[in-house]
Amino acid sequence: MTDRVVIGGLLLSLVSCGLRTADEPRGLNAYPDPEAGLLATVEPRCVLPSDPTTIVEDGGLVLKVWRFLLEEVHAQPVLPDEAGLLVYRATIHAEGTHERYPALYVPTPNDGDAEVWRDENFNNNLAYREGVGSIEPISCLDALLFAEQNARVPQLERPTEFLASVLVNRLGERNEVVVVFGAGTELFPPSSVHGFEIVDEYVAAGWQYRYVLHNHTRQTNGALGVPVPSTSDVDFARRLAAQRGLESIRVTNGFYSFDATIAEISDFRGR
Image 1: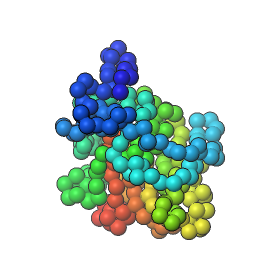
Image 2: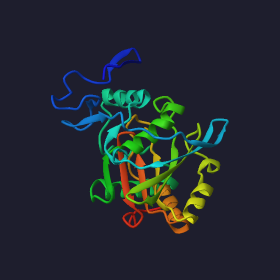
Image 3: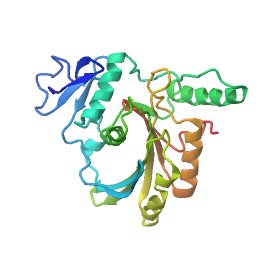
Image 4: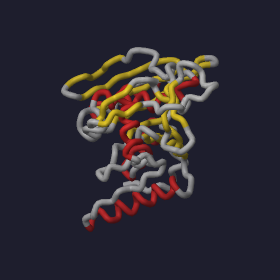
């Protein structure tokens, strides 16, 4: 890839020289992944193949629905050719704040917050040290949804979270997917764009509520967001499982995604 982007006066190449291997297919672009020796591949087939249906678009709030046939590429650890996402990753990589297991930054807590932070660290240790769930390089579909929000509100400038529900319906040998995506311009998306009324319609029609995905923004010390459900995320996911049959939870920071079934996070602490 030859695109070059000016970021804060520093001219960054989104692809370093010499990274393309001799047998790499034409049309696939690679640049350094946070882990030494790995390449993050920009795959032209990593796209949302249909236009969304916009349910809400008002005052910075958005609620969109995509429905399409799932392709193998959507689960692969590749990136869309989306400039904003690549700038985000290149900037963080240049800063060196791209570790797979970012430490949780804990500000000096008030007495009432100390227990909450202990529980957050407890959950992180289950994921980081005990291997509960998995933390893997971001998948194509996760990256597409992260890029969607980053295009709306650049994450390097104003961290915000999105919420996406992913439902699956088997069609012969293929899976049809519905993605319900809600976000705003503040840190957390309000309940008005969670889209659970849409989820309920599909669940009632027999679709599987495969997973819920949201992002964790960069921490206030500049580190990547922790790719592990917070204590409030754990309670949220458990309610969705009880009420709507949610199967799994995913959390991404734009580089890595955590994935676990609701049963796998049974030992996680909630709030």
